[in-house]
Amino acid sequence: MLNGIYQNAASMSGLETWNNAIAQNLAQSSTPGYKKAILSFEGQGNGMIGYEGSFDKTLFRESVMAAGKDGIDFSTGSIQNTDIKTDFAIEGEGFFELRTPEGQLIYTRDGQFRINDQGELVSKQGYHVLDGERGIIQLLPDGGEVNGMADGSISQKGQQVAIIGVRNVDDPAQMVRTHGGFVVDPKVSGDPYHLDSDKITIRHGALEQSNVSNTSEMVNMISVSRAFQLNQQVIRGKDELLGKAIQTLGGRF
Image 1 (cartoon, one colour):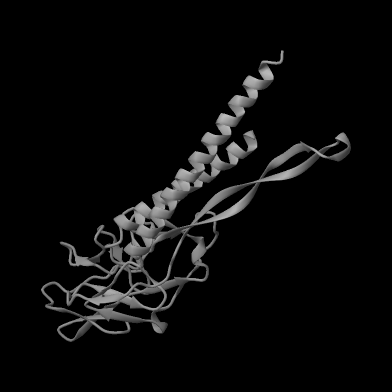
Image 2: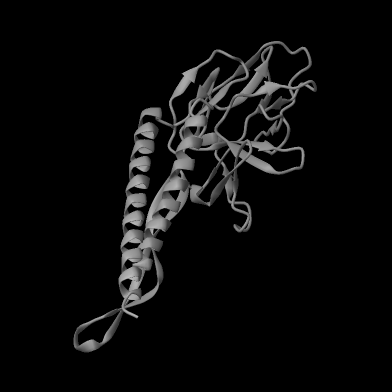
């Protein structure tokens, strides 16, 4: 009976993790390029338990409990025109490459960029947007309106000043979320990214929206709440039975 309580408690822990993922998705649903957090459940061995079988023999079987496994849904979101000259959206796969002041490379689908005081193209966090050679994109001082082409090239007054670099990774499951985008899991060796600028299309004056469906997330939240309540009821019932068993057996001595 205790094993059953442990299993229900583990299920409640997984449901709590799922609820946190749903809350994060709802909070970030209006963030351009956001990729929703997902959670899957799988059976996990929890040791052997014994029970009395025929001929007064104790038999053993493997105990299994539910375990949550988090992940990221990298499916593309819809693209919405903004007509803002520093907004860019990737059609298809790939990520914009950013560099933090500490030199870390960040990858994002959020193309809501701006121009800093030094005339450099940066993300909303202030990270430098990189070109195909991983160089900083420096715009012309007083160079006029920024124009973008489908190949990622940027020009001012008819003069090309840079080409935005777009990189991809063979296995997105290796990516983990960080502030401002994603990084490859530190346990992965080497540079798993490859340049994809010649295979993609960039829309200028547009942003990719998040791939979160608020309706689906609200339905999931209701399902999580009901499942959590059911597990609570089961644990409460098992606890009452255990208490009665202790009282009954204890009264015989």
